[in-house]
Structures are given as C-alpha cells and as structure tokens.
Length: 164
Image (cartoon, rainbow, N blue to C red; front, side, top):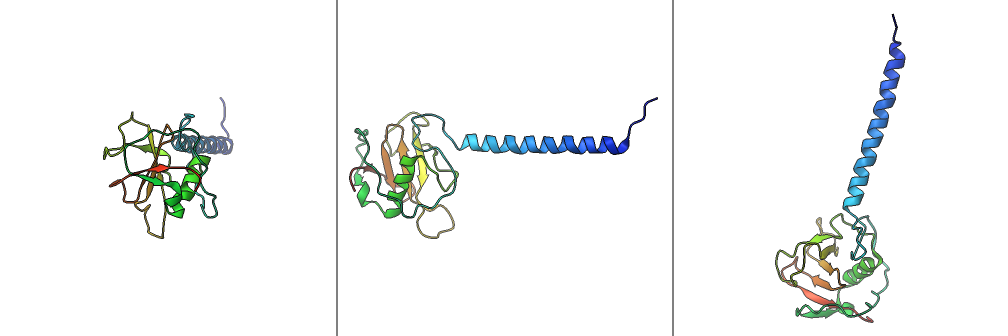
C-alpha cells in the first residue's frame, strides 16, 4: 500500500498552478502585443506604447512621390504642431500613445481614395486635455500617402510633405 504525503502533494499543485498562471499571463501579453504590431514592411506605424511628443523635430521629407488623391491639400508645415509631431512619430514607427494608433482605418466615409482593406492606418493627434482621444487624426496609406482630418473623418486634406 502506498502512502501519499499531503503536504508534498499540495506544494506540487501550488507550483503547477503558478507555472500555469505565468504561462497564461505570458500568452495574453504576447497576443495583445502581436495585435498592436503590423509585421508587414509596408506598414506606416508599428507600435502602441505611450510616449510624449514634446520637442520633436519637423517631419522629414518623403522620398519619392505619393499618390495624388484629388482631395484638397495641406503642407505639413501648415499643420498644428501636435500634428507635425505625430508625423515625426509615424515616420519613426512609434511609439504611440493609444492602442488604436497604427490600426486599420476602414474608410467607411469613402472620402479617401478606395483601396484594399488594410491599406490605411489611423493615428490619434492628441491636443488639449479632453478626456477622450479627440477629433484630430492622421491617416496613413501603404504607399506613403498621408491625410489630415481635424473633425473626426468629416473632412480630409492630403498632407504634402517637404521642408517645413
């Protein structure tokens, strides 16, 4: 007849439960991190962590032409400072303040040129101290085309970059 030591059995279960919790936390973190990162080399932005954009330099000029959308245009140098700072962050690939930044923009308003699903990415331009993300956004296309909306997708202007 074999006897089981209750103290040893209880500590083995506790160790196993600890490993299970650690594995679950690691898996959840990895799944959340993978969701916020677009592994394609053509993605405009790739990270979703918090940062401050104060003191950023002017956006670098784009190399090569971007598609012409036919929309009204705005020079990057004429955007508000917070939007110019976000352009720098987008070109650097992040880090971004909000989890939604770098995620697919569906173009439901159909104001931007029609492209395949996943072509556009959305970025929050945070201004002021409002409690939510506010209405300011930059939308980036895979081909390097960038769009500014100061009113949460009601109107868009294509951003023309250059030496600000």
